[in-house]
Amino acid sequence: MAARSENTKNGRAKIVNVTVAALKTTTAGFPVKRSGADKYVEAMAAVGDDVYGIALDTCVAADICRVALFGRGIVPCLVGTSGATEGATAVMDVAVDGLTDGTVGGGTTKQTKCGTFMQTGVAGDLVGLNIASNTGPDVTT
Image 1 (cartoon, rainbow, N blue to C red):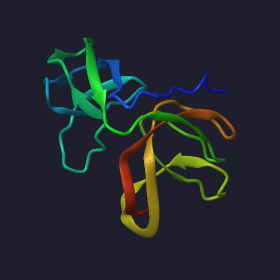
Image 2: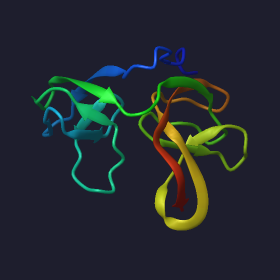
Image 3: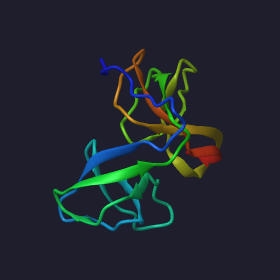
C-alpha cells in the first residue's frame, strides 16, 4: 500500500529535493525528467521526454537537486487495476476504476492525460497526482 498521498493546497509551486541519477547532470533553469528509479532526475534530452519540472540547481550525479514541479498542485487520486508508477503520466485505467500509467504518443486511441504520479501504488491506493502537468488529450498506444 502507498504511503499517505502527497498534496499541496496553497496554490504555490511545489519544490522537491531529488537525487541526480548516476552519470547525469542538471542545470539551473533547465527542464528535468525522471531517470530510472523513484526520486531520481536528469536533464531532458529530447522533445518527446516527459518533463518533470525545472531544476533550481546545477548538479552532478548523486547531488541533491531542488526541482520546481510543473502542475497546479498535488492531490490524492485513486489508482486503477493496472497500478501507478511514480513519474509516469496518469490516464484512465482500461477497467475504468481509477488512474494508471499511460503510454503517450504513437497510437490510435485517444486518452486524456490527467497529470503525473508523484508516488507508486497498487489498485485501490490513493497516491499523489500532480494535476495539470503533462495534461490534455493525446493519441496513445
